[in-house]
Image (cartoon, rainbow, N blue to C red):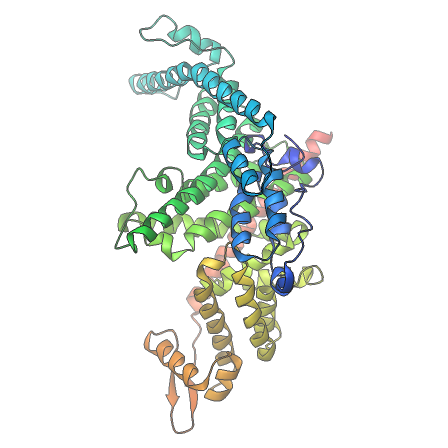
Amino acid sequence: MGDVPGEGAMDGPASASASGGGKVEGIDGLAYNGGEESLASYDLSQRMCPYWDIHMIFPLISFLEELELYPPEHLARVKIQLLEKTDMMDYLEEVAAEQGIEKKSEWDVRRDEVFQHLEEYEAETAGFVESLSKYNLDRQQQDRDDDGSPSGRTSVAELHNKYKDTENFREFPLDADERLLKYAKVLFKTGNYMNAAYHLSIYLEGVCELTVEGAHFDKRLNCLWGTLASCILNSVQAQQDLNEMIEEAGGMNGYQLDENHPLRTYGPEQSATRILEIDSLLEQPTTKLGKREARLQRAWLLHWTIWPLFLFFLNPSFMDTQRPEDRSQLNDKKNRLLDFFFHEKNLVTTQLLCPHLFRYYAVCIILLKRRKELQSVLQGISQVCHKISDPFTSLLCAVFNDLDFDMARYHLQRCNEAARVDYFLQPFRSALEEASRLTIFETYCSIHSAIDLEVIAQKLNMRSEEAERWIVNLIRTAKLDAKIDSEKNRVVISAQIPDVYQQVVEKTKQLMIKSQYLVRLKAREDRDRADRD
């Protein structure tokens, strides 16, 4: 693992961050492009890139190139610097040619070495994967016959001896488990994310579950990180291909993903599964990570969670391509991911290590109306307000802390500008603007029994006629319990009776989550004390 975070996601984030904080050369210190300085100040890429794998930075650079916030030659130079740390030689040569940079002779040498490694690893691991699959089937059959507990783990050497005399046996080396990981790593570094995810899944579900070689915490954790990176990048790649196909076809026309589509096999749902598995692994009392290391890995995990959560689960265009029978399962996965994201331990990590992520907490509260976590997020923001200045967190504070609706109107305009330059928020800018207006309006209504339409229009940055139509639509869609008094040109708000039962349920749920967190924290402290003794 090199000094750049994620140089080979199979190694996990730890070694990169330990070497120097995960600084990505070239990304930090990008110069603004002319008059776009105010917009570029809303761009969080330079703060977030150090927490990502190198390959995850390329879609972001492409987005920044379209925005023209930074000089294109600077972005191209950064892209070339990063590509040279990968094995995507064709992509490197293409970008270099666009910039008039002559191809280096060493690139051809590296390409030949990569192809050689791919051929060697594929030949060396094919027989191992087949034998591992046979062993798993035999083990399941034995368990059914014996009606007992699952059989114990085997070793690679025992696996080799068990099947070497069987028909169609394919030879494999006794370190085939390590070679399988190396094969997946080379696949990943060449940009073959789907194939990398496939082989890493074999390692997780086969080697980690069935062999003594795979029963190591570090190997499982690093493999989970690699699978997560592969699924995220495969999702982004597949979504780009899908968008191009839809554009060529002139629209979606009811298109739905089939079972074998890359977004279904190793897509957002699998990314969410791996995120929750990493979270569970980091929380295990037997985890040998120190407190600082565990918190650093959690900060990485939060940054990686942004990808499936905002690009897919919260993106209506993605959900529209899902079959009706699959949407319920995806919504369940989305809710579990949101519960993880808003967990108290993650809010603490965000506050201590990466306060810029409070933008995305604020967006979730505005967009999804997650009011149960509002106070926790506001408390976290108040602790770091001297470190960050973000339109979305400022809007949240202005509306719910200060009840300053003039300042909220100012931040509303800034939120729209910030969403424009945010890779994760840009796809639903209009929905976010609508939700922000609704948040301001609902809070304003909660402290007034009647409001002049002119005042509402002013607070929401809208014309009077536009504001009236907007409110009528809210009333019609049951999002607002109110009526319009045309004579007095005002909105009369109906009294809201709080749902006591729901309040009790929410408080009980939060108490249970906090209790579980305290139990885990106590177990970890006991383990640390035992290790010191």
